[in-house]
Amino acid sequence: MSESLTFALFETSGGAKIHRLPLEVFPNFWAYVYIVQKDEYCVLIDAGSGTDNSHENLLDGLKQAGIRSSDLTHILLTHAHIDHYGGLSKLRSITNAKIGVHELDVQTVAYHEARLALIGRRLASFLAETGLAEETREHVLNMYRFSKAIYQSTPVDFTLRHALSGNQGSAFGALNMQLGPFEFIHLPGHCPGHIAIRIDDVVFCGDMVVEGVTPHLSPESINPYSGLDHYLESLSRLQDWSKEASLIFNGHDEVITDLPAQIQLTKQNIIRRLRKAVEALSEPLNIAEVCQAVYGETGGYNQMLVVEKTGAYVEYLYEHGMIEIVNASEVEQGKPARYWKLQEEHMILEELERKIGTSTGTQVHT
Image (cartoon, rainbow, N blue to C red; front, side, top):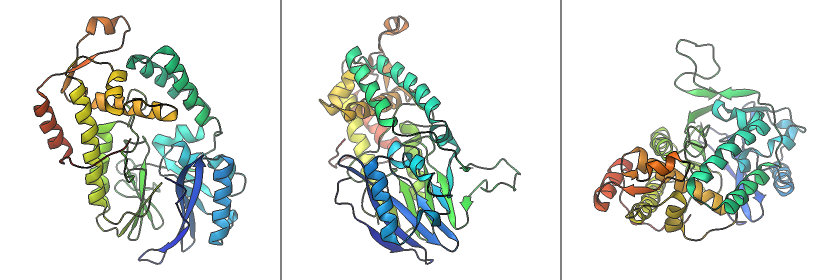
């Protein structure tokens, strides 16, 4: 995710050209977007954040690829996180490309202000339940609102959805969502409407797999179709769907050539974080205290990310019957829940490895 990201040109087995464009989406935080040319299609995959630097990098990348914004036929979003969709509001005025997004991300993209208000309220409720101090909660909420303020609602031209049974007139079939040579699969967890895109022997996986980190997760109390359960199921589906792919392009790192190995590392990283949480829950703790035990001291925007991710981990452990709430009467009075493990630590860890399908042994970062 550093400034070492580079422009590059690739070609699929079917002759499609892929231009990889690096964008500085936020200060010192980089991402890739992609332009795919095949037959009459000239498709931009993801749009950057919409900051001045991100938009300028995108225009420079188009020029380097020899493509005008007016040449774009479609813009496809892998998911509605601001570093991937924020650039739409500036692109809309310079291209007639049709914008496509999964139906579960339409509200975020097309009705941004209302969605921001709703998710902001859910986030405030979640933060109150974590046990964070009021001053810290307000600071986190302000960071959330500020990071989304650069974007304005942008109309969506078509949505990716599974057709109703028997409805063969839909542009996206019940088994294989498709647009010309592009196929899609819905992979919720990191984001409700997260998709992967396949063309020939290449897959664009968005942020499903990112080298060296576990992609961000939040509890479903904030956003339905997020959370660890959905994410783990999506990892398995992505691996099966991508069996014939020779190259996997993601949103922030170099090309992945061995997806099963990268997925295994991701699962190991998740197990490591869950292990730290389980170890900490030998005594009753609230989510903020579990977060401190798992991640240590954090600050800035990262503080919001790790407390949400901890919330997703605690939610998973609780819903799978591995931990319990020990202060029900206090919870009824509006105080944060305190959790405690229900079984011996080794039994929980064995069950986690059975469910997630891995063994530990690899270093992980936030």
